[in-house]
Amino acid sequence: MTISLDAAAQVYREAVRQSVRKHATFHLVEAALLVVTGIFAALFPVVSSAAAVVTFGWLMVLTGLIQCLGLISARHAPNFWLQFTSAVLAVLLGILLLRNLGEGLLLLSLLMVVFLMIEGISKVVFAMTVRPLPSWTWMLISGFLSIALSLILLASMPVAALWLVGLILGINLIAIGLSLGALAWAVRQSAAG
Image (cartoon, rainbow, N blue to C red; front, side, top):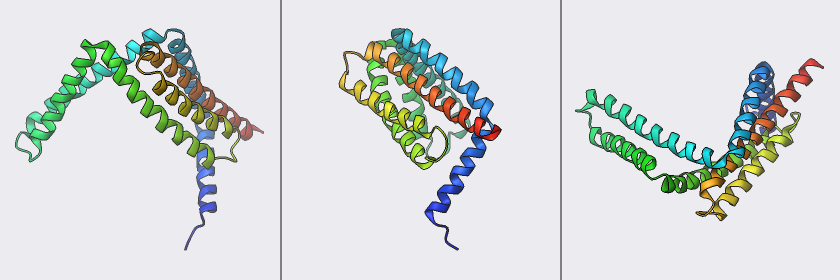
């Protein structure tokens, strides 16, 4: 029994519609929080950029330390030294990010370029997949915006890394929040009507 791609896409769209409809209130609250956070990040881009590097640095240190602690009981595992080396490198990278905020901003800027590009492409593909759903164009616009922001950040490296990371992070959070809110609101309204 072969299901056509069109039928499979229709089943997927209906599953997405039902999921969004079921959790519309949650998605609307999430959208509002994303927009508020994005506005804060865009209004205070230097603070947001520095906070992102500090957060990332501490996450690297903590995950490396937790991985080291988890490896205590696995000292005789065949790949112990490889995992231990990975954990130590995570701790060292976290410490370097925390000690050298400028270089950390540059590294985070490069990671953000990659993240925004991949996220943008995935949003465009998702929007095209759910195209008949109400307000699917907002998701498409959000995807194209993420791609454009990644290219802007790449073109302005390294000069604008100090403030542009926070600004782009803010704009991206606002775009995600607005597109998610528009989609959830439209699906919720179509269920009520």
